[in-house]
Image (cartoon, rainbow, N blue to C red; front, top):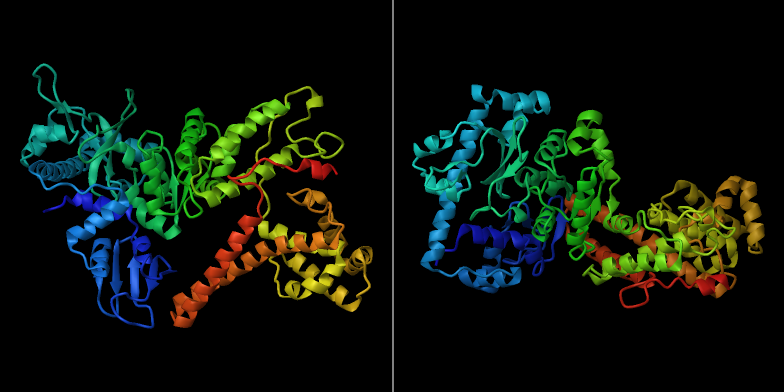
Length: 624
């Protein structure tokens, strides 16, 4: 039984190689590859390499080599077809039956692919002929492209006159019927001859992930509708499963572990030419689940960058609906929203690549965008209005299938809600964000806060707690002495605080604060004791008892230790890449286990969650 190459390619694409192999082999990332001990021979030093972007594994010790199917065959002692069936079941695919019809469809796909490739070459040639001058002027003078970029993306020109494509391909043995099947000709009505689908248009080849042409997009020159036109769907092309620029972006996305999504062909090409090569676009439709999955095959993080108009806002909203059920801690989505009336192509042309990079670097999280969609412009002056906002946000967060991430989302939104509606807002305390009901206008929710680095806040909280409770130092001094704060000013204060408490055991809170102020730390100490410094405005309240202070210290310590462990893990990975010894591998395993333990402890200590009342703010205890 012969299986269609398209089916095998889809099977390999749906099952990341490192993920399948990682179930049997302990892999560690080494740059753009993964390394581990070979499962096919005994070894102490890793020589087994998984090259995810190329889709193969190789052992430099025993010479074992192959793809995901080969790996399953060898490790599970299966035949080729048994391995394919096992993998297809895991990927949710049905193995095609060996019948004449399927064999005929495979031959058809092969023929269509050959016709599309020949057509692409013909379009490319036409662009550089005299008949393509207007198209060249538009691309080079009008859009600022150079010849290298045009050739890299294989842009072409479809002449306005009828019959040229048919005649050229007929000389290569490609008849009209096959061109109709390939979406290159339209069948004529009432017995008329078929005619070219693309005429008088700049052509943009649409390829699969391996760079093979499967369809075209076309932009009209001058006036005319539609402005952009895609090939009709064929045996090779389903536009809801394809991303434009995928083949060109693949290497850069794998290296950056991040892929940028824009709206149009020219946005992709302009950003790529500007040095932002990890960029793709859907084909004139909202992102589908299949396209989101394709993005995460390229990289674990996707930045969705949509135009700053109403259409772009609608596209971003639809993207959240697709992404929320699929997002996990390992597969993320962020949003970089352009200013009104701008698109990436125009931004790069007018302000340069640096402006685009700043926009991408400042991309907000998926949760921040959900907050914006559900709160922006919504009145929130009454309990009923706020309850409606809560219900909508809760419904959106519950769409997240990953339970760990869902719990974290609840905790985040809960904190943002407290910041907007906590006690004292508009009642003699801090002004209500977005206005006060007494001001005459409806209250509207602010955007979610953009907090400082969490670890930095935890460092401030640790020092503030000790300023309020110096007696706690007897129990935590050893832990505090072993820390190294990222903020240099805070680290100097940490050492000064330890020195003060070591020299004078009788210092109470006021005495310690006075001592530190006299030694040049007054401004920093004042800031640490200001409740407005912290996202959790209740942090410095209600900690009169030593037992409460001890419990609070444990909660503060976990994120600081986690940050330290992450830094040590990154260093251990670098050490392993430089010298892949068993000791270095063991060190990475130990740090990963500790990182996972601390991460779970952080989540367990967080507020809110899918199985409890996520919006409980404990305001009664706060007022007491």
